[in-house]
Image (cartoon, rainbow, N blue to C red; front, side, top):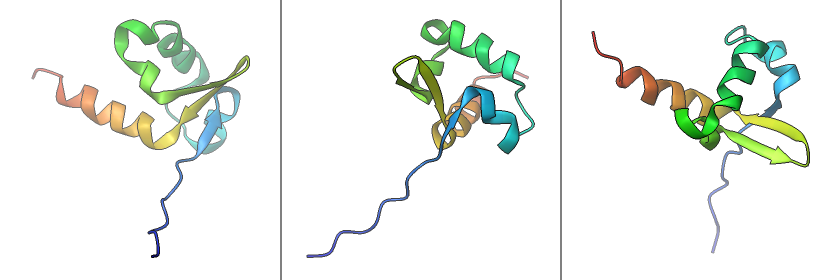
Length: 72
């Protein structure tokens, strides 16, 4: 039986986020992390000790979900 290989999402430290993406700036990420329990951002975060990593795939899914909630 062969299992299909699962694509792993990239985990990016908050301090290195802007090496990979221009938006949001680190200060914006820290704001999202501070209010993670009220804005749902906790689903994008992986904590390893004191280090906070952002799951790249989950982040962009979270953005899309939040964008769908916007009223025009």
